[in-house]
Length: 196
Image (cartoon, rainbow, N blue to C red; front, side, top):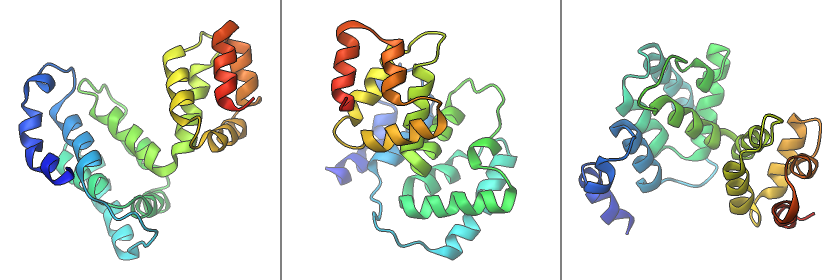
């Protein structure tokens, strides 16, 4: 199935459903590379590659992330362990993370936002989802869509790790934040999924 999907990827980019989505071609290419590329899932890391790719990424960042193909190739084909090593080498060499080094200018096509989210999820998914939950439970109002999505999707898999990451960055537990910002059956439902 994966090989069939890869062979039709260029057709998918121009297909009817994707043609009218408010998303750029480079965003679609990145997302397709992430879901359709075969990756090594082990923990082995090529240290020479981890040291050389930050230079490539830095050049792309200096150019305003205009060389989409090179970033898509790196993010779309490397294993998680390899990418984490590359991100670490980038931070060591440049004193900042890749997500902070990417331009923070207006991003009308959404590519930089998708790229930042991708890098954050690869680097530490639990930390990323804890941040989504923190933002969803801010006092200015509850983002019920994000809150529900993260809790429901991760309830059986890695919610304990996300709860721990949430508590490291917050002054309260995830259960306390959700209890404070929700009510009624919705609160009961979320608490049941959290294991409270």
